Length: 495
Image (cartoon, rainbow, N blue to C red):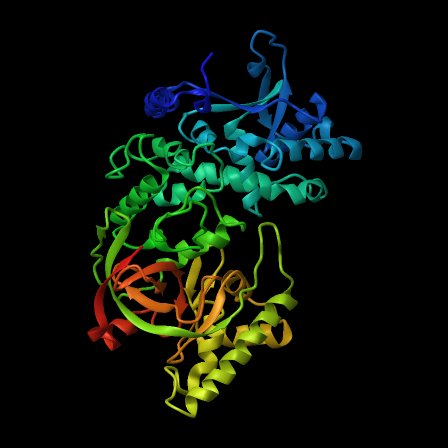
C-alpha cells in the first residue's frame, strides 16, 4: 500500500514528491478519499450527494454493479426533487451529513497535500465511505450556486442548507480556478490556510501546480533547506516573476519566528476570510501606480535576509485610528462600522483644523471629500474592482455614514474599513493601512510597487526597515509623490 507523504523519510519524500505531478496528471482517474461516513447513516450521506447533484442539475440513479460500486450510479438531467430529499426529516438528515462532508468536519478540505488530487488529474471521483460522486458534478454544483440566474433547487430546500453553502462553494470554486491555471503567487496565497505537518510542505505540496521552471530557486523539494530560507527564496522568486511588489501586499501574519518581514509567512494565515486578507488587496493593487511606473530594482543582501529597494520616503504617521477587528466568520453590524468611521472622522477634523492654523494640508479645503474617498479606497468593488471612485461616490459614503443609506459603495467601504487602521501623517496625508500601525511608522513609495507601503525603522543598520504592510494613501496613489519628492529617492534595506 502506498504511504502518504507524512509517512516517508526525508530522502524518500524528496524523491516521491518529485514524481507526484506526473502521477496525478497522467492518471486516467483519481479516487479522492475524503474519509469514512461518521455520525450519519449511509442514506443521509446519499441524500447529501443527491442535493449536490441537484444543484448541478443532475439526478443520481442507482444500478446494480457489485464488482464496481463507483459505476453503479449514473446521472441524468434532474426533474423534480429526489426521494431522499422529499420530507423535512430526510432534508434534516441530509443537512447534518452535508456539514460533515464539508470543510468544517472533513480534514480532506483542510490539508494542503490534497489540493493536487482535485487539480491535476483529468478526471476524479470523490469517495466518502461507501458513497461516491464525480468531481465534475461537485464543481458544476459550486458554479451553479455562484450564479443566481442558474436553475437551482427550490428556494425552500436551498434555505435548509444555506448556512453551510459557503463552506462548500468557496473551496470547490478555488480548486476549479487552480485547475484552469493561476499564477504561483495566487496559488500559494489561496491555499495558505490549509495545514501541513512540515511548514515547508506549504510550498512543496503545491509545486506540482506550477510550470516546472517558473521559480528560479525553488523548482524541486529540498528538505535540507530551513523554513526561513525556503520562505525567503520563494518570496524572492515571486517578486522576480511578478516583476513587482505584489507579493508584499495583504495582511502579513507572523507565524515563523525569525522570518524576514518582507517574506510571505506561509506557515499560517490571518484569522479572517481569504478575500479580506489577500484577494481584496491583490485585486486593488492592479488599479494604482503610486510609483509612477518606476522599474523594480531589487537586490538581496545580508545573505538573502534583507531586500534592497529604491524608493521615496513620503512622511511619518502622526495620528492613528484604531482598527475595527473582525475574525473569520464574523459580520460586524453597520453600527460598529459607522462608530469606527465617526472616531476616524473626528480625528481628521481635529488634525486638519490644527494644520490649517499652521501650515495647511495636502488636500487644501477638499479634505472632506478626501476622507470619504479614502473610506472606499478610491475604488468601487464587487468581487473585483469595477472603476475608480467619483465625487458622487464620496457623497454616497457620506449618506451611509449619516443615514445608513445603502448603495453600491457599501461593499467597497466594508472591504476597506474592516481590519485596517486609519492614519494621518505629519503633513496631513490620510490613509488606511495594517491594523498594527504605530506612531512614527514611515509611508514609502517603493519602486516596482503599485501602492504605498508602511515601513518601520530598524536599529540594526542605517537605512534599514521592517515591513508593516501596504496602504491606501489618498493623494499619492497615482505617482504624485514621485514627482513631488523626486529628490528624496534613496536605496533602503528591508529585513
